[in-house]
Amino acid sequence: MIPKEKFYRAYMEFFETAERKRRWNIFDDVPWDKLSAVANSEERAIRIETYCAEEMYLPDYNVAGVEMTRGDFGLAWFQTCWTHEESRHGLVFREYLIRSGLRTQEQFDKFETDTFSRSWKPPFTTRRQMTCYGALQESATYLAYKAQKDRAELENDKTLETIFFFVSRDEAAHAGFYREMLALELAEDRSGTLADIAMVIANFKMPGDGLIPHYQEHLRIGGGGISARQFFQRAVLPTLKYLGTTRDELKGAVTLALGAAS
Ligand SMILES: [Fe+2]
Ligand SMILES: [Fe+2]
Image (cartoon, rainbow, N blue to C red; front, side, top):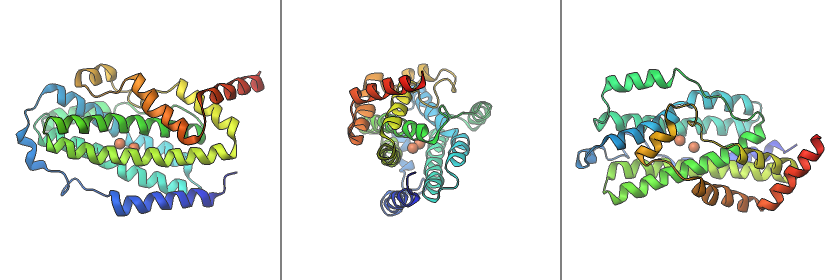
């Protein structure tokens, strides 16, 4: 068993950085007064709306996360802190859609009812598998948001640039925490953790994929997704490198796990 103290210490480090360096708020830190300088488009509306929908399943993400981590101080408090940080993401996208005029209140209300008519279910069953998923999903989300920050910078869109700077920085911090947790799992049970990582990579999809109608199509129209190649090269490979493992070792662990199961 991984000593609980390790989770607690990792969380305290995460929380200290979050409190001292990473806090932001939608009231004072986003330049809403720069909104009118940028021409709106339906393509932009679809892109932000898709991100907003994905962030709006937070109640479901939270329920699953709390259930898996309750009973462990460090992990349960991380989950709670994570939920608070993620709550700002859906909120800032919602405010953007309304304040920019890209969506009317009536349109958003309809979108909200439709989004909440479905619910997200965790794609994997154990805490360790969900830790693998968290590390990859947060990395992929970081990459998508960072690309949006760079794009907004090129388009001289200060409002979106600021929003995506804050949300991408949060996602990077979340990915970092999950990677650290994964390193603890690996030190505890190397072959079992590697088999889980391989399984999660093989079955990976973003939370909105299959849940939000026309998810892939809307990301394509809005220019909001990342390619499978980018995901592999910039999320999977750096995670494996951080953990000190390779694709070959992963394959070996899968063969071993399959052999033990047969
Ligand atoms: Fe988020
Ligand atoms: Fe996140």
